[in-house]
Image (tube, rainbow, N blue to C red; front, side):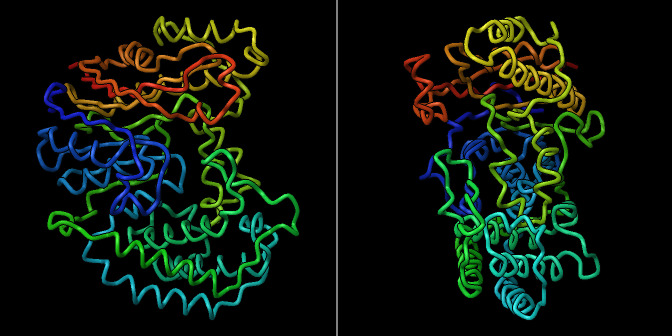
Length: 434
């Protein structure tokens, strides 16, 4: 088992300069840097073949480096888009040579396809009919060639069946669509807005869409240059699935190490943030988006039943919730209190699940960031340290890193409650009791 004291802990903050290689395939605003994961995993001294899990896997930083180091990579995320991205990062270098001929086949199949306009196609949110059909023809060609020629379903329901090669092409299409939607980029860097009217929808030529997709495929090939160790990457032992951290499909006591960054306690809408990509994989936005948003931890949506605070969450958490509930600001009790209590209830259940999955004396490393509600400081590291005790996880080490710019700095109204928009990112190292 890994020793918390021996772990090499670098600054986990992601920076633009650190986005190299496969990190560039799908730039992601959440999580930690590859260098942080690389150094920490390399210093863990785990035996080859050990199971390393990330229950909030995001873009797959943990699972990609776990696989590269000879461990069994186990990653889960409720958002099917992020599961596709994580799978793509596990593409063996030996398969890169097949990308060019497959690209030609995909484009040929898409050009020959006949597809009538579908008024329910979620791509129609942003694209006029002809453009939406062109994008969908490319997506269908990927699915038919690399997933299943027989099934008529969509990728959103087949993430578990996607190969890393199929996921690679889906990520290229994600990037092409998001690039085409640059006009709809909002002030919130995580969101793509919707056209005000149907007449404002995009009408790129079919040739422009195909070329944009091709360009991203070629760029991803060029940025996939691998070291000798990476060339030997094999994904047979890797598990990337869509699942909730509150109910992990993992047998009890089978995980040797957890490395993850839980969702921020800042009401980021992770579902809306990936809305274009969800549309690409055929996710029924109008019917299913609300359900997905409700299940994601940290969602700004309110559940029908608000749980009661539990003393097992620790004094810091219970006192914080009381102060939020009693805060004089508008909607503090009626709305914000409910979102925070939902977050902490989900995190308590998730920590219990992590403990269930871990072997005795195994290590769990979580990267968390503090935040504010109005003028109230949310010391998430302290909350997690106390909450984890009820899940038989003891904090053995904490390393803090200051952050000068956060999402709070985007919102000018936050300055009316406090003078700082800086934050602290904490790396918390837990050990499970015997």
